[in-house]
Image (cartoon, rainbow over all chains, first blue to last red; front, side, top):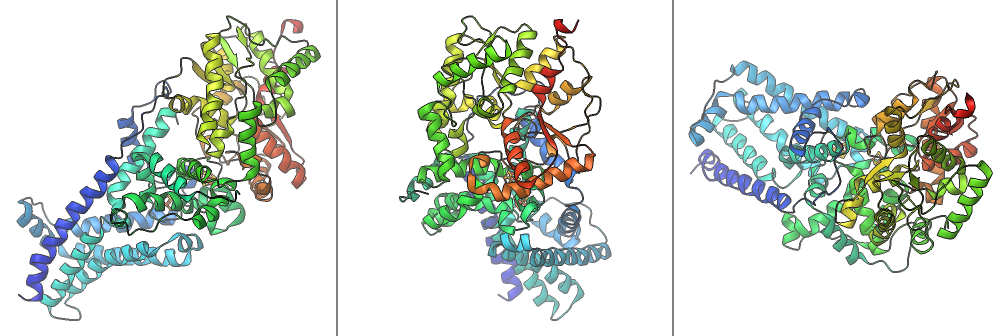
Length: 217
Length: 419
Ligand code: SF4
Ligand code: SF4
């Protein structure tokens, strides 16, 4: 078995299994903690917890009006790399083929040129996020190894993917194998570190939405 | 503060408190640092340790030590005595549980709730500011943090009634409404108590004070001493149930409202058999019913939103409604309402003497807000905000005026004598 076979076969399969079990374990560990019963009387005319939760998930997609100026870089840059990652992951033909092989599902791909451009923008945006983290006294102070590891495992597939399609630095097969391995690392890391916010964002926002809505805020 | 720090008690308390909401919040932080923008303690000092996200650390560590992947294998670091000591200042002295950082957080993490739970764990371990803890113990043992015992309450009410020629009913059988007091008002701003009574009497409300349950402030809650929080809550609940009232009114005090309206039922483990109103909510209700007419108040002023009444309480609109038709020159500050800056004294921080220097720095944010409106009178509806700002005003030689909305309403009430 060569490196590419290893990457495409056992590596990615194990990574996906770890992802699924890891996400389920961590999520269920939180869900099964249960929610304390709230016996207070909700303010009249406020939405119930479910609607309030959905509203809060949507509401925090854009900056709070009071802090729009303070949040301008974080939100703009955050949107750029999140959307960029989504476009590259779900819009690139080989990725769609991979999903099709796995699940049978497929959808139209975006032109490769668009994907390359978006990939490059995403890499720049992630770099900007890192520079911000390293230069902002607040962010540097509160950051831990998790933040840097999470950055690295997110950035790696973007860079290796760009290198593979650009045939930069090595044979295509080797580059592709490295790319797939970097994705495997990302999938394995996701449930354990802060990348799990991809799942928790819904739970955390919805919890706050329900909490505040009950009070009529 | 104490010699004996019981780390295990803190770990147990954390574990008991962490349900789905706290766990989701404790695990969700992406370290974007945006919350620093919202917190007055960071803004006043620019010290990164005051970034609200940093306050998540103890609870996150305690949680991970028991439930994370490594925790289950017994490999995760546990919370230590050093952690508790190091975070004491952040959790007690420099968090008002004001919820401002919750507004800005893209993950929606509620640091105020995290601080509340962390205080409870620290208090269980015996870590916390001595003066704040003493206020809680005074409340339990003497009825109030400032020593307002039932006998003193009776004395002071008699004196206020005589002095102001006003009816201040105490333990009146058959009353519909129980009015509570904040001992801060009783000791420092008694006019506020007379004003509430004047407005309620004028509207024909059948109300009373009670010797059994009068102290609305709850230092048990503020210190995280859950047993005292329950004792203080039960005093009011017992008094209200004995009198059979339909409603309990919380005076001009933010956290007292938050505790009774949004926590008490959970503290005692059953729904409250009465409604809870902040005084501004109750007066707004009476105004809607057409019970009041006011003379114009022409002094230019701005309004400070107490966090627990506006941003955390949901009663933001009622203060504005009360000012409608009364105030001829009311100017909103920027930011205002649910985004307003905290006074820096909420969440018990006012009672922590060593926090005074940082509170004075925070007060500068407020005075700048006031100056930007072009007025020099700052009105509020919380005696604790008022006390915090009064102290800071003296220390910083601010020349503006601080007033209470209830007192203004009472002063401008159109009564029979005006005809
Ligand atoms: S704003 Fe929220 S996610 Fe960002 S650092 Fe603060 S607590 Fe963490
Ligand atoms: S709740 Fe208020 S005081 Fe506490 S960290 Fe958040 S903004 Fe700062």
